[in-house]
Image 1 (tube, helix red, strand yellow):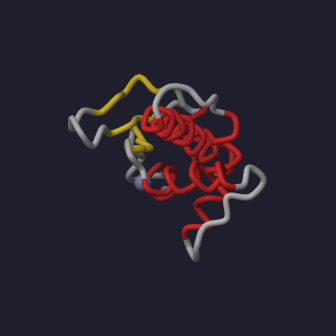
Image 2 (cartoon, rainbow, N blue to C red):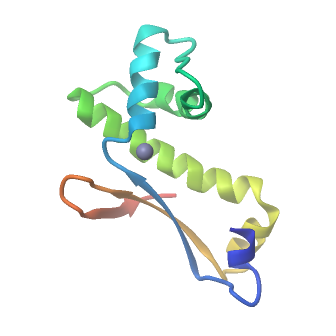
Length: 120
Ligand SMILES: [Zn+2]
C-alpha cells in the first residue's frame, strides 16, 4: 500500500472494505462469548481473533447476533483504516498532504450494496 500512495502511482483513495457476515469476526464474537478474556480460536484464525477481540469488546451487544456481528465488522473496518494511517508514516504523509484518502466501507454480502457511510 505504501507503493500505491507514492509517486508515480499516488492513488487518490485507499478503500478498506469490510464485509457483513465475516467469518473471522463471527468466530471472534463467538469465542469471546465462551471466554471474554481470550477468544482463542484454532490455528491461524487465532491471529485474526487477537486483532479483532479488543475492538469487539468495545461494541455494545445489541440486536440479533447477526446485527451485533455486523456492528463489530463496521468497528473493525474503521479500526483497520485508522490503524493503517497510524502505523504507516508513508500513508500518513500522503493523507496529511491530501494526495490520498483512506476510506472505510462495508460490503453487504446479501444485497451486494456497499455502505460508504462508515467514518474512518
Ligand atoms: Zn471476513
